Length: 411
Image (cartoon, rainbow, N blue to C red; front, side, top):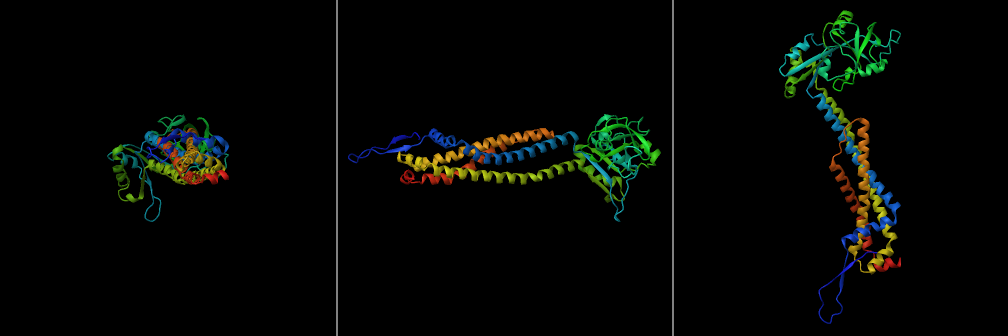
C-alpha cells in the first residue's frame, strides 16, 4: 500500500456539506511503489531486465570495440607516419609488365620534399629450408634485394640478429621477414637456408612491418651478393619514399613523371597508410550490422518488459482496486506502473552498460588495443533503455489506471 497525503480544498459555502479532499502521491512514494513489484517477484524482474541488458551490452561493446580499434589505428599511424609513398612498375598500354630504371632511387631523392628513399627488387630465386626440401614447397617466400637504409624508410625493426651492413651484404647472408622465418622454421640467426641453389646464413629476423607487409614473407639479401651470384642489374621493383608531411601530395604527383618521364602512367604510386585505414574501415563496416543486431536484442528486451508489466497488472488487479478504493487516482496508478517499468529497464540498462564496457576492455586487452569507449555511449545506452521502458510500460500502466475499482476488487 502507498502512503498518500490529503490536501484540503478551498472551503465550501456554508451548508453544502463536508469539505472534500484531494489525494496526492509524493515522489518518494512513486519510487517505493515502483520497486514493490520488482521486490515481490525478483526472478521475473531479473529475467526481464536481462533482455534489456543483453541488447545494451551488445550495442556498447560494438561501439567500444570499434572505437578501440580506431584508436589503435590512430596510434599506429602516429608512430609509423602517413608520409610514406611507394612506387612500383605497372603495365604498358599493351598489357606487358614494365620495369623501373636502375637509377630510380637517385631520381626520387632529387624530388623537392623527399626526405629519404629506398628500394627492393624481386629475384626469381626460390628459398627452402635445405637443399633436400621439395622444390614445389616454396611457402610463398620471395627473395628480394634490399637497400641498406630500407629499415629506416619503412619503419621496420629487427626482432633478433642484425640488418644488412657493408660487411654482411657482400657475403651469402640473408635477413628474413617474420612470416618467412616462421614458414622456414628459423627461430634464431645463424641458421642456414637454401637460396638460389646455395646456402645463405640468416643474420637477422624482422618484426612484422605494418607499412610494408610484403617484407614479412621476404628473404632479403644485399646488392653485392645479388649481383655476383644472380646477375642482378640494379633495377628496383618497389621504391619506398618518405616526404615532408606538408609535401606528401605534391611529391605524390611528381613521383611517376620523375621516375618515367616518357610513360608516367606505367608507374603505380600509392600510400601504404591509406591501405591500413581502408582495412580498418572494412572491419568497421560490420559495426552498423552489429548495432542493428543489438537494436533487435534491445527491442526484444523491451517486448519482454511490456509482457512482464501486462502480467503484473493482471496479477495485481485486487491491489489496484483496493488502492483506488482508498483514494488513489488513475494518475497515481499510472505513475506506479510506469515507474516500475522504468526501474526495470534502468536496471537492465545499467548492468548492460557495465557488461558492454567489460567486454570492450577484454577485447582491447586481448588484441593489444587501447581501451577507448566514448562516455556518451554509456549515457546514450542508459537513456535508450529508459525510453524503451517508458514505451513498453505505457500501455500496461494505462490499462491498470483504467481498471474500475469494483471490477478489480471482484476479480
